[in-house]
Image 1 (cartoon, rainbow, N blue to C red):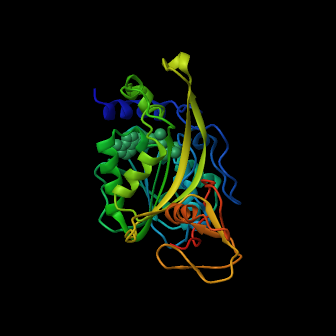
Image 2: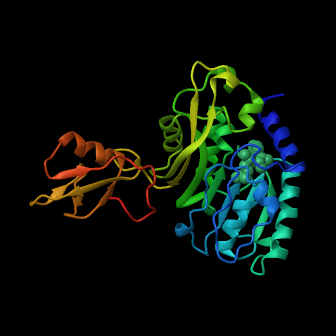
Length: 323
Ligand SMILES: C[S@@+](CC[C@H](N)C(=O)[O-])C[C@H]1O[C@@H](n2cnc3c(N)ncnc32)[C@H](O)[C@@H]1O
């Protein structure tokens, strides 16, 4: 059995017998006024981090969600769109789709505002999406892409890029690792399916997203996720996995390449007009979010009238940035 089949077998079990904390998080979903989340959806939160960034979403948008799981995030997206078929949720595992359908019916009984047809459930594969080119505003996946081997990951990202409208946004949440995970763990299909051994490093992960053609990336969160401890996993030292949440924009990259906003801020307090490496004016005496390239440019200049803060990896939403 290849690793893809092993993952599908794993999630078939996870659909038939929901297990809290099976692969990813156990915390409560964030509170949204008027949204009641059925317990079973909470138990089936098989994601890490979140792809639902409340401040970004607009009701007229069409949202594609890949790897529906128990339906928690698709329900949260539907909270913002509130119309039939506005959220399209794709999954490869028929038992998971059946369970999600059951969960949406339950959610409809518990929430006056929600109808189960607000989410259209579709059988399909992340590697070959059953969705038209340039047809969705938002695409999202939580904790599926890390399971993929690298060629499949590139294909899955290319598919997301294909189906997004120009300017559309890709929201992803996945584990990352501080160092390459040894081969004996990477090739363990069950650990991979559990989101424990397929992770890439931060830079490798970003390079994959940029390589798929996304021109602007915002790192929205980076948090501790799991420890692969040396005794249990046969390692020389413990590995602390993190989860990363990011949004990638289907915009062309600028001449200097894709821009990554990781929460670095520049404050300029000099007298004359200041421009960045691409000629954009930097305002004086205000905190100015900058991408990693601009931050590196000013760090190298080492000016006495510029302060550049370290990345927080919690960039505060769209609208900021000079580049
Ligand atoms: C780790 S779970 C995440 C579920 C959900 N995103 C969440 O956050 O709770 C992975 C999901 O992807 C589905 N899946 C596995 N392989 C897939 C594939 N090749 N294409 C689409 N979905 C797939 C599984 O059935 C499962 O629902």
